[in-house]
Length: 629
Image 1 (tube, rainbow, N blue to C red):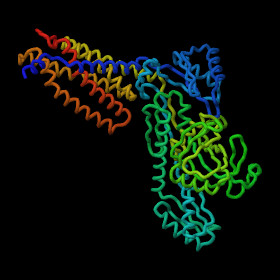
Image 2 (image 1 turned 90 degrees about the vertical axis):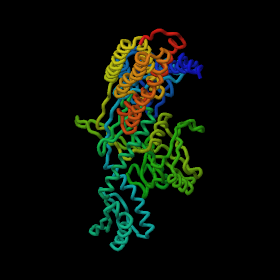
Image 3 (image 1 turned 180 degrees about the horizontal axis):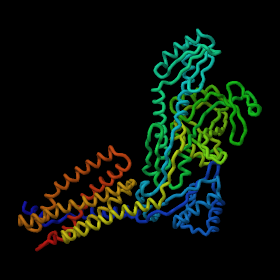
Image 4 (image 1 turned 180 degrees about the vertical axis):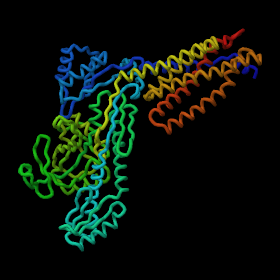
């Protein structure tokens, strides 16, 4: 017992604790270092659809930049894309203009900020932390969902269902079709209409207002959505679009995006780190999807295309090279049945392809269709809806453009279900984009970008400078105060405080968390809280020496041991508050909560373990006459 007490009073740390502190310090400095190297202004060049970059393209790009006397820091051609780094934003912007003019519509030329982390740190997996839109810059979109189209698509989904129900009820009908903002079910005579009215009332009275009309040439029943159904449809369309946008943004690998509802029909999208909107708009706004249809082998497609009259039950489509083809009106499956999709290379032809997996419903439909149509052709139709701004009579007008191209029309060699391949794509890039859009899902309704803002890197840099200046000023003031108040012990606390900041930055970098202005505020608060623990410990040591008259070694031991409970209580309650903020907060609130939580945990380690290690190293197991406290 006496030996144990003597060992405690000598204030010696076991070797493993010193080793732990050294390891944490080395790891912290290693993973915090990438944040000192900053980012290089860069231009990223991606091939457009049906385009593949070659070494000739690389030479053209290099020659154009050399001719314009724009110095290039480095140029990398990888994965079919260029990433060209520059010394400053002025060279970056000049290069973008020149390359856009050189490549035209063959490429997407986008501004980028590429991390300048040395290769040796990259090999260790060290990377700078992500910066939010308010620090790094990026793009902000306000998107308006076309609710009219959402409701129209909802009506169309009921057409086949109504036909099936009437057939099952053995009620003969002439047609079921959209008529303005209603569905019109036409019958041969009034008795048949009344029989159909009874069936439709029984099945759809909760979702539709069912109204018979006898005055028309053919008696009909009109079905109009109730107000509640319209509201539910619009709400579903908005939520579906938000989910789809999140999936697409995840595919773009944007750090900490903000995608949230604004009002009843608008969505806010913020993408930190993206300076150029071209690529973002192409992916976010695209409503591309697929339809699988059987080819109508009877009839002349060229004649139908020329005259405008297609055989009954068929419709004229075109391949991308302009060749017409007749397809049946019935859709086998579409993009809504796609569960997953991945791009690849067809081993037989060496061309790009997309591997598709369907859900259970789509798989059963595809299996039933291919089983009955072995030897016939099935076409894959690529449908893209977009909004473009065009000039008409000197005025900018937004137009909705729908393109429907047949990618391929292959012979069904055997029956298949929920897994198959799509071939006939023009390039690997097109296969990747199509797979991305299919994986992310189709938008429930088209969207229009009604507001677009680019937050430039200069504004972000101003925010960074001001934010870090606040950290530095607060840090220096704390350093001065601690040295003045606690002498040598104050210097030890300052070393621990500096280590605390390094570890916070390292943890944020390792987690690839996003730092925002509120996050910087959390770090500033942590600086003040981190030193509180040492103030409690040092004051306890003073009290033991002055009031109780204990020995110096006993005072050091007692100061750390007795202050621990108070420090733990204070930090745990703050940590609980931070957890609540993270759980219920959004965006900036979460950023503040993350840095505060990390700061609390790291400050307890550095303030208790770190300072105790240094104090024990200096005073432990020694005869000390006076403490510099």
